[in-house]
Image (cartoon, rainbow, N blue to C red; front, side):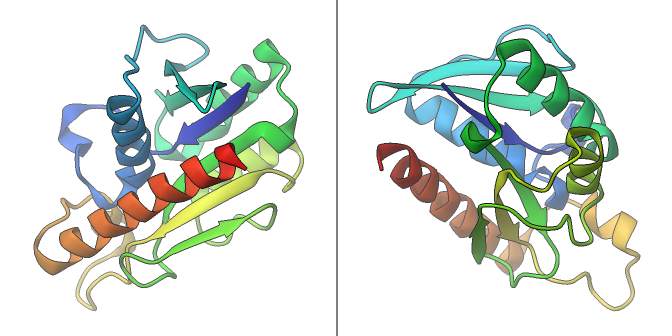
Length: 175
């Protein structure tokens, strides 16, 4: 079994915000592969899908972004999934909008959700895909930027990055 954690903030007011790229990826995979998200358990909601006969659990933490590690830790412990089978999807302000970056391990960088996961798992040894959202406009604080709605050209680029992330995930699971 594989586990894919899409990071974001729960609640309708955060739909299609910069910080919810991870949610958008797992939502897209869930729809494409016929899954359905269930009730909140382990501080997250999950949907089960199959890609190439491989069981994949898509999980959206139901904590705020900075506490994402609570959900990841609970799911990993409950299902005893090795970290080599865990993938975390997040936004990244240090990548141009629409670019993606896949790593098998590494630091949390400037992302507080990833930082919390690293702290609670006590390791950087888990896979991640970061989706570029670009830098905030000069006149906007980072906090306001990541909670702002995607729009215009940035939205089109980020949605392209979400598509690329989904393709990468399917490729990783098939291989």
